Image 1: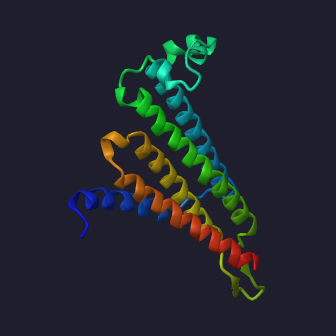
Image 2: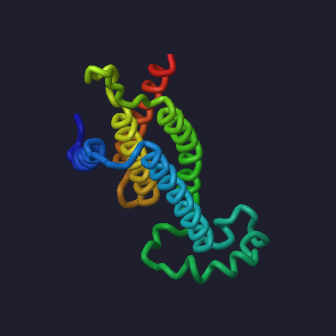
Length: 197
């Protein structure tokens, strides 16, 4: 039986994913694809900066190369900028570095595949075709692809957010966010296979 805490995380996460899925957009499919890919790239850059910040806070122990890497000129140049934010002590130190590096690896395992699948789906998506008599011969499938793309991207942003804040949130919300991404990506994959076959 699901615990109340699990349900407390699951309901708002899946409700927000549903809200994204039902959101209509007037943007074209290529614009939606561009926004989704740009969002994932910006998120990857932010996670990389947080990882560097966590290493700096952790000192020599958090750097794989020890004193040599920790004494790097870039370390000295960027240290004041990255340490200027004292609002997130949980995002510093060796444990935070390990968690953030796991987040980076997770992103590298799933997001390039999703971006490729998204591009493939946007290429094969069929737009509405109407005969000369006004009969719809083929439904517009771009709305389906746009919805799946937005859901998967939103779920990836949630997943990374919960990964970064794991000491505060625990593992359940991260799993729920991953489920949203997984099923949206699976839907894109099935769509591409059905159209391409």
